Image (cartoon, rainbow, N blue to C red; front, side, top):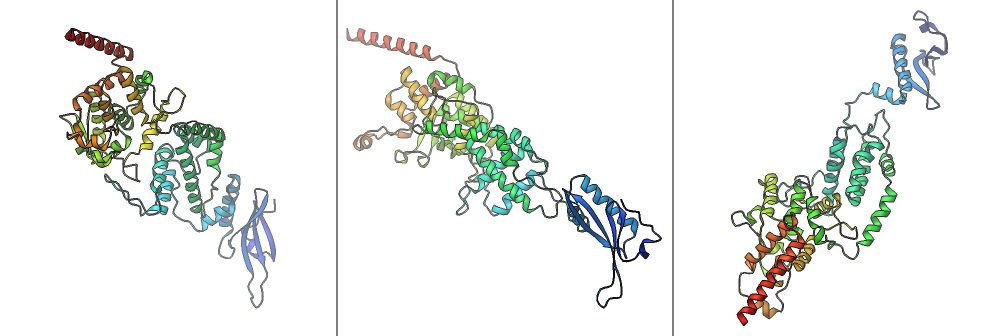
Length: 458
């Protein structure tokens, strides 16, 4: 370390570079050109990451030695903390308002920069921006799966271990495809954060998302996901739970809004689209009926469909009303910015999260519970063919001639008989009756009917 400069002498030193120690130097240059004045300036030189780094502190004619020493101490402290002294000095000389680098702020900033003009409707089905079909799902997934656990953390403080433990680990177990999309979108948020990094002393690790994916074994999870998709290729939408396993699967459903929606679908055996578009004015609470408009049905040419509601279905509908009773749509969601409604994929993901599957281990599909109902009804031998098919709103009227001759109210066709079947189905799903007991009771009933018919014939 060089000899310290003296306050009474440093301004009279000759031309050259004079060290004060701790990296601080006085550079005294002779006049240049026609100038008669010398150039005196304070400089700091230090080592950062193995390289010599110079910092121009300022004019020695305007800055006392004591002040120059304070600046040198600041730069030395920055090096000890692992910070780039040049960046620290630039921030000191040109202070800017401290940026908000919290995850939730950056996610919101990312959304506003790219799609700030998107229509985010409340209650009504929103119009999607032209050429941006899936634009809003970016924000929804990030907010629900990333912002909730990590939103208050500055992005520089988040580690790969945190992302793996709090975001990707749980999310990839719940749904690989949605977890993968969220990871891709989070990478874009990190890219956006990097553009806001100007003058910030930190260095953003933009590889942290990939590091977190490696920690959860992404490549192996991807192989398993592809294998599962291949095994389901021939029965997408119809992976159903066997009737014997239905009560156990029904009992595993949780108690939140989405699970109550899944319960309601199981108990009414209707298609997912009819529920996701359902409005509260379609329900008659006193009559325990749900009139589905023809334009929300697969076969609109048959008109509306009145679905009888069991007590269990009414209970689930009541839970849905507690959340969305003040909205027009039953499945309204403030988080689903694309349509303003809970999607069928959300219901499917929630089913996957509780591990409900068929006998082959494939994840059950919400539509597949209709198949479970039909198989159960055939085994128990309840209801006629027409009653069961119309409960599922299948096209069973036969030829155009047969359909033309049916002049009754198709919406309410066999309503009482369908109500009896769905009430029994609800009791079975809730575990109130056993499948074997139902079969035996049905056999006994049929034997009594045969005996009665024989006696009348005799």
